[in-house]
Amino acid sequence: MITICLADDHQVVRQGLRALLNAEADFSVVGEAGDGLDAIQMVEKLKPHALVVDLMMPGVGGLEVVRQISRRQPQCAIVVLSMYEDESYVLEALRTGALGYVLKGSSAEELVTAVRQVVAGQRFLSEQLVAEGIDFYILQANEKPEDPYETLTPREREVLHLSTQGMNNTEVAKKLFISPRTVETHRANMMRKLDLHNQTELIRYAIRRGILPMDQ
Image (tube, rainbow, N blue to C red; front, side):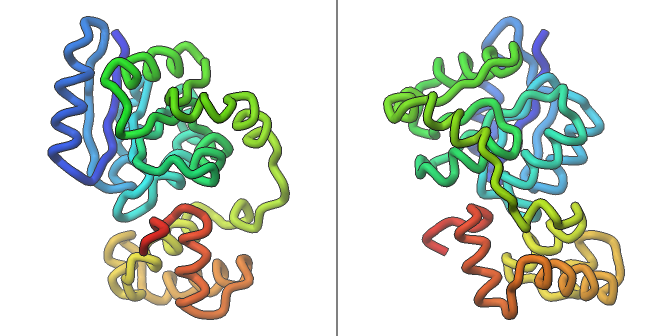
């Protein structure tokens, strides 16, 4: 039995995915999360074979969910399910540890196939992306230039994601169960490492990195 967790901030989407995947005799959806932080904790607790995750999540974004899970729970194969087909999103998802990238406009059969392939250790891209050349995506994903984001600690990344959603230090502290002063320290370190100087630059950076949608 292939166990699967779902992470999407829309309950209706999760219900549809659960019904779709549970219809397969050898699939079992064992958990759902509507928030990035909850998704990370869910996977660490349930240790599923696969995670299907949306890119745009409240709390911590989908790309950071992929990054943390691929490091903490490498046995969990990850499929990104997204409406974004831009090259930058696909490459970043593959670089951070996803094995599959499926567009939300794809067929149900495509998602089922994606889950089976990533659990088997194979990459999977939607047909529309394959048309662009899967070899190109894989080659680009394997090239890892020096990235200041990689110097951030997991906590600094969480502060970054929550800050870009308009939360102040007190709200971030409440979400992460730490003090506002600790948040302030993490935020200062994060801004320094990324060479950012104000909230506007932070938002632009988040959009460029795919942490926030381009129409933000």
